[in-house]
Image (cartoon, rainbow, N blue to C red; front, side, top):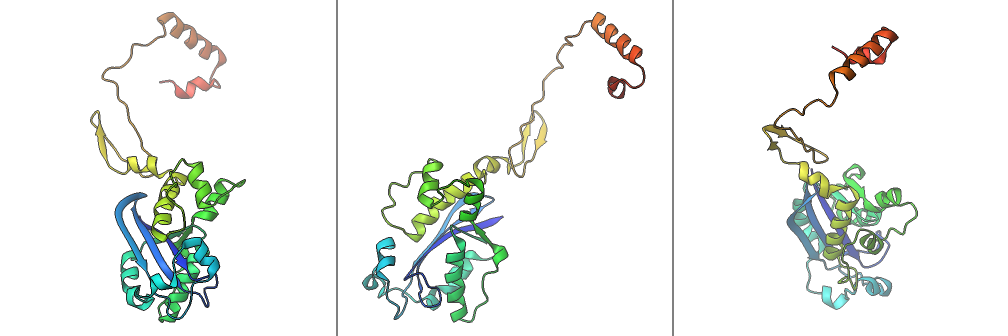
Length: 232
């Protein structure tokens, strides 16, 4: 299964008027990072960065002047995501902006069944919260000390680590490869399975007298004795 953990930064909060100015993404294959990423800054045209948004991500209008438009990079974005699932924290916000940009270009929207919202996952898993990205990093022991401001690629990288922890992916990934243990093939899809096979059978701990006494007890109880179905 291929997933892209992604994040966007925008000029403001209204997807109908504001624009995407940064997108970052990290590719996972079977819940394991492949090392492939995407990171693009985007010129929002005549839409200026709102001061409140600037305080969050620090991306200025001047910095974006020489960056490509969304139309210039949309093919790169679509090619990178391909048929992967789109995974984001508070995904409604990010997908709303992506689909608004797609609509402006006459492109079909990202279907909701291709989207995973890690914020919704976190709220189910940790109903007492808090469940911000920073809070989840603290919960799972992920170093986010270098996150002075929001950034699409950095936040995607942190979220990828959080996501893998939330779904138990570090353990599950260990079972994706078929291996051989003591001559037995082992294949696991969701979690590692370890098969142990002794070189020789252990010597029975029951004595002959104990075995005979148990048989006599079963015989006395009769056909309804639960041990009967396991004997022979």
